[in-house]
Image 1 (cartoon, helix red, strand yellow):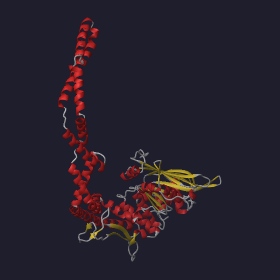
Image 2 (image 1 turned 45 degrees about the vertical axis):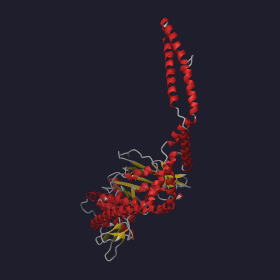
Image 3 (image 1 turned 180 degrees about the vertical axis):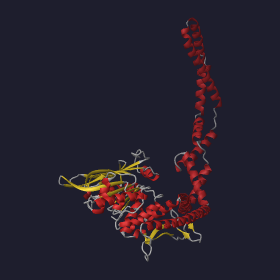
Image 4 (image 1 turned 30 degrees about the vertical axis):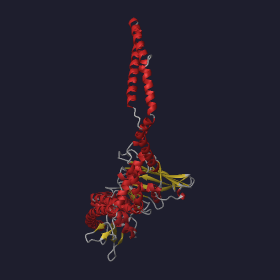
Length: 584
């Protein structure tokens, strides 16, 4: 709900802040008092284009800010996440989430903010579209947008499950179709490269490189190339450490024995004795390794030649296919898959086509079920809306939900009569609301209805019927009562009051029959301060203050006792729904 609206330096408004209630909020005031200015200010945070002329004369910038509670919906959270906007904690009434929309307008530019984060007008509009529906001079009304009709019908009928099933199958067909299109596009390229792939596969497979083979061969090549040096060096080292007359091992043995004698005299030598023993053991082990290594040294020129030839083959492959043996093997795996696909691309296409046929059959079945249910729901909506219109003094009205489909050769969806239709993300149906309000008139699209009084009542009837499924929590009616009066006005007021059980409603009205039913009543008025005209708004207290304003709507500013009595009666009988007050 719209918790509060703050406006500063916008048109005739110097500064005001108003907190709205959760039910029916009515705004009244004399013609020209500034009611439409408030709606204009509200439209700014809904993302409407701003005029620099709207900044109050003498001010640097206009600021409009709206705080919305109960805004924690999946779609809003998605929009916030997609645009890097932080969510705000719950609203003042403990609601789950809060959105703050703010607009700043200067004589050069305007800037938008969502939760204090700069946002484009498109983002502001997208967020606002999930929160509020403004019906009036500044058109922001979902029911007149044809693209919304199918969604409203599905919501009313509780068809979300069927629609989700259809959407899942639609995505499956879409994915398979895209996969087939990509394969068809690749087919020519694959054919062109098929011979090249065959040559490269043959060349690599002839060598058949193994993982890490080049490193192992290089290590073996170094050993064989240096066999003579390795043999001489190990022999000499072994001799020095173990076999010579003054071998290091023998000298360490002598040192160990002498250190043992010293340790018997003074145990301070114990630690050093351990070090000498360790050194003697290490030398003995090193000598043993050298002796064993020397015995295993091979002198194999033939093996060395083979290794050098093999390394040369591997290096040639590495130069051609990536620089490393890992790159060569990866290239072989990749072209192997491509070659295999090129060798049987027609078979792969045929398999994909079979999968698409099966997926389209499942999609068609889901589309037919969804379409059948929609027609059943449409019949219920038609009856219910005609009943509501009769209550609003439009008994001769006719209302119809019309469905259309788009025949398409090769379309994804096959109907019961074997006709192929285009598939959309929402099904094979397009829906639009049609209406006739007078006997003898043809049904016309709802968006083409021109009469102010009729469109007001039609909108109310539709909103009332769709109230429980409509996801926009806030409805704003800017003088929805244009063209109606008397008994019809009472019925419109009653309908709006009932609708406020499901939605927060903000309504600008000049009719006492509607004003009398408000849960909250605000008066908009102009005043002159220091030679400047200023628009302000005040909440009227329950009781006599509100009754006097309703009476002013009945008989003008000079409130008579009769008008005041009539106003009280309107307020009492209107809310209870009982009795008929005297005609204002």
